[in-house]
Image 1 (cartoon, helix red, strand yellow):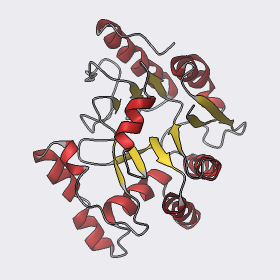
Image 2: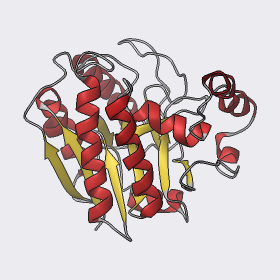
Image 3: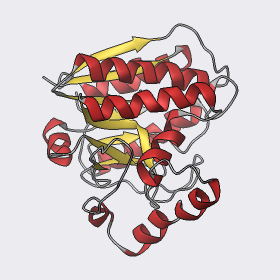
Length: 257
C-alpha cells in the first residue's frame, strides 16, 4: 500500500477530518503530521507566517523522501478531495520519472501541494536545496520549486524574468501532454512531469485565475482528485469543495469512501 503524506495545522483540521480523510478512504496508508502551532493566523497564502508554515511542511516532505528510499510515495495537501481509486493512475503518470506533479495553472506552473514521488538522491537534493533557500529568501517552497525545475535555477534575474514566460507560450499553443516529453534541465537532473489535469486538477488548473464562490469552475468528468486552491480562506475552500462535489455527483461519481 502506497503511503500518503500530509501536513496540517489547526486552521486546516476541518478540511482534514471532514473532507480530505473521508474521501481518501482505505486506498492509502495516510501519514499525517499535525502541527499544533498556527504560525499563519489567517491561513491565507503569502500572509504573515505563511513561509514559516511552508517550511514546516517541507520538513514533512523531506521525511517522506527518507522513509521511502527506493520506493514511491504520495504527498497531498489536506485541501484536496478524492474521487475513485487513484493509485494506479498516479503510478502510470509517474512512469520512469522521479516526480509527477499537479499542473497548477494552464501556463505551466507546478503545484507543490500534490505530487507522487520517488525517494532517491535527485529528489532529496532538490528539496534540500529548496529548504536551504527558504531559510535565506522570503519565498515559499512552491515558488522555489518552479524556479529550480522550470528555470534551471537561473542566477541572472533579468534572464529569469524573460524565460519564465516560455512555458506559458508553449502550453498556450500545444497540449500539456507534449510538454512532458520535452527535456527540462535542472541542477539535480530530476526527471519530472505533470499529472494528467483531466484526472488531478485544482481551482486554477484550467484558468490560472482566482476563484470566488459562484464563479464557474471546469470539473473534468473522470477527475480523481480536486485541489481547492486559487482561493483565499478556509470558508471559500469548503465552498469550492461543495461546488466540485455537486458537479461530480452530476457526473455520477461519489467520493472515494
